[in-house]
Length: 332
Image 1 (cartoon, rainbow, N blue to C red):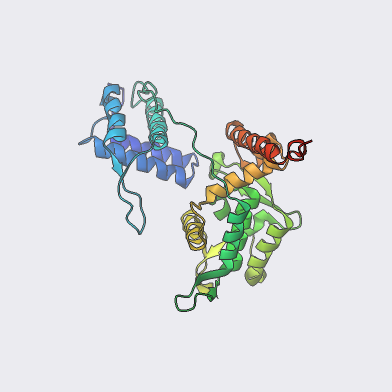
Image 2: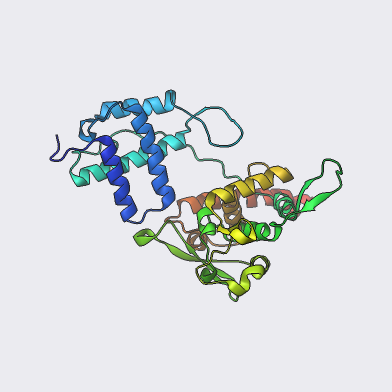
């Protein structure tokens, strides 16, 4: 038994408070809470964290992969599913962080999670948009669905200008959903077409970087701001939602719903903010951009993900040459 003794729930709450104090992002904290709920569901009563054994945690991970079913949130029921290997790996990482904190605080002797092999995860498919997909999405910003009574008629969307600016910013910068939602007027420089982006969260973990936009994206953002331009302050968010008399900052969740609904309306499948991130990265490399510069623009801490993009871009280039190389095509 360790010098100090706390229950599992006390340890989880203590670790979350510590992470909040060190400036971890809200999404990270939320992810910890989701992981801990599964732990509370599995363990009955209030076990001490130092009394939980490696064997019990092995059984917990087996239960997660073989028996536990998750039911995604949403309006339409989609049934229950087993957790993916990537999700189980994330849970393993979160729990390793919990036990590491417990050891540092004297609530546990060893990090038993580190002694448990995490699940193997294959590289996920990187899906990008085609130019045709983007054109459909942009056209869908301006017009709504066609009328049921008049198939040739559709209504103009009041948020079309804003939505177009959002899509172009996602595509032109590769910023993440939370980063886009956090952009403020003071972060914009439309003279140099640059935007200051804040990374993971406040405090010591904040990672600021500069991203850049083209003239068309800059014009689209400026156009979306015109109605508010005279009243804008440095701390005002660029992208807002709601009626004119009750504007609220765009959130990560609202952005996800916005682009998903837009994709359904125009017939583009699997539309989500991170797909714009992938599309920017692949096309940046296809068009001659460098790996190190891309790594900095995307805010990556290492080159691992950037090199995945590079491998895809290189395959695309090789396939493109096979299809378009003049010697073979001209049969010289």
